[in-house]
Length: 198
Image (cartoon, rainbow, N blue to C red; front, side, top):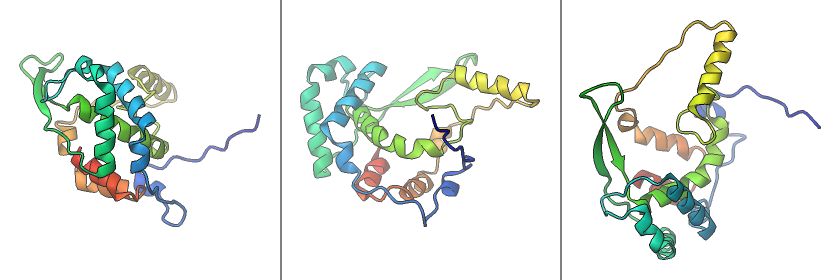
């Protein structure tokens, strides 16, 4: 078995992208709305369950007419008429912090399927550039993996651990800057337009 060379991982997406070497991904939207991709996206949303959005449609309700919903979503994405619904806002108590709440935005099941279909196509493009020390919101990485990484760092002589909870992190992300970074790799304006909406 041949050994795969290991290269140092870049710290930032902009470090990874060499304009002379990296080719942009074109014509991605047609892969997003492929029926098989929408079906895989729906199965992931169904497996995650969760409550419905502002339209009141639950996962079970969506499942009863999944084929029709997927047909409609595919047609809307193809015709560029898809518009996400407003996000349902809820507040949940913060664990271990009595009297404090975390605000959550809950998209409709329909919009979650669209978001998952986008993720299915974007994740393989961007996952290789993410830092190995980042475990949050990444498929195949868990809290237990993060703990193993921490223990490995401690065993190697590291003495400091920082535990931080950034207030309103997702609400404070500069979406224009984020989309400009994504645009360095994705040339399909139809995908970028969908991302700006969701």
